[in-house]
Image (cartoon, rainbow, N blue to C red; front, top):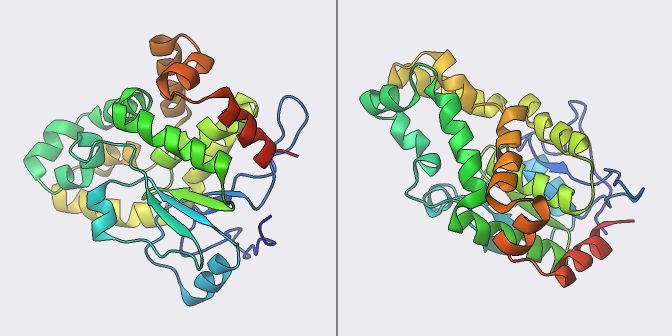
Length: 265
């Protein structure tokens, strides 16, 4: 089991990685509870303050799963907890637009064409569709679940802002564990209170690209309709969440049982 979480006065476990948080504590439909100190989600883990680094190493994390693309990983390599295994488990094609929107924003004309006039919201909905259907996503999320099921734990998984790729990973794991959709969505939306760093650099990009902030803002936050797009795509493409898990992700019943045994009280 993980160590006792150290929560700062601002409510963050790691202020220098503000979207780092425990997925434990949620109740399931069957009345069980997701164990605390075993499964963490986070934003980028390439820069941690000295006090946070001490706290981070105290969580007993044994697996760090990096959902970013190879470009992101190479540019900003993770700080790996003492004694942890690092695994690069990408869930996006590194050349896809959704994986390279920052590069797109660096080219003003392309940025205005792709994201201007309300297109950013449509772009985000397409990202969530692809997180359910693309081969890279299916392979990556299958590996995330298998690693969570098999251990060793504790485990942390993350992307850059910890809200979209990580958001769908968290929604997937909590749903597999039997957490009600309302609680899954509520956990997902918590990311909106933890995006100060994202706001800072996205506002700079807004200035540099010449795009109005309102055209970029949909990419800096999570919205219930983004997550709903993923779940709706699951139903449309696979027929049901169970079929997505079995046929899309290719997860065995033995893995799902192992996940529940490890993660639920």
